[in-house]
Image (cartoon, rainbow, N blue to C red; front, side, top):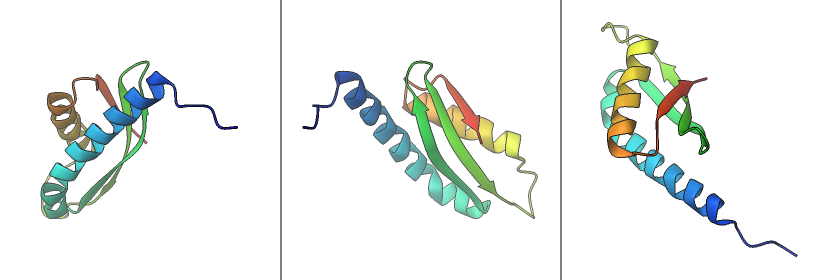
Length: 88
């Protein structure tokens, strides 16, 4: 017998949905930098979004740190539950 989802699980899923939507809004911009971003997990207890960042921008100075900081600023502005972004 399957247990009903706990309230925390629903809230976490809602935040994950917001994060994915915010990342989708970034994709057209990341495409120009040949960068990719993917949500690996959201850790609700600390407000941490764990992301997989990949890509290469041969004609610009976009570094991994700048990419992470830009994505973090975008997420924190649009998803108040996100307090930190960690890249894996």
